[in-house]
Image 1 (cartoon, rainbow, N blue to C red):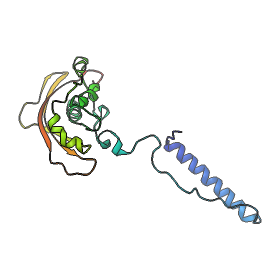
Image 2: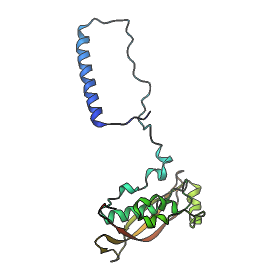
Image 3: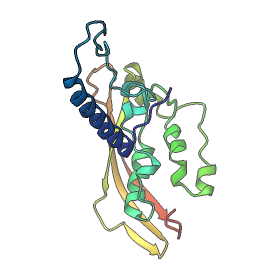
Length: 196
């Protein structure tokens, strides 16, 4: 059974419960005690987790990856940064190639560019992924504007942003990994009237 939390419903139910308890408490003070009524015991265990989600360590990238929803699609800088982060977010427990990250970033791509995102059979970075894969590692990318004047608005609906992207690997088994990487990415973003 899936439970969903609705703050306004929870508040209303809590208020109603308190009102009922106050009313019952007020009545119980006048009533004689009954020895044949069993006391209500508290539940033996209260589960405070979610019934619909997996533990973070079982979720892609330990639940740290950026998603298309994180981009403000009306802002070129936000869209370019989120796309750059997504293109460098790899989880060796499920990703077999770097292209797996590009496939997850398809919602931020033009139809033409998205059609070219086909995962190859082999990972071109396989050697660089060997140690991280042994430890079930995932990448933690960082993207900052590149130094220089390469960023430019080339049309009212098109802009180029150049970002320096670095990443490090985080091992699920807590083994310290020293490998990582650096790339400079030219990101061309087109913003349409729909914010895409």
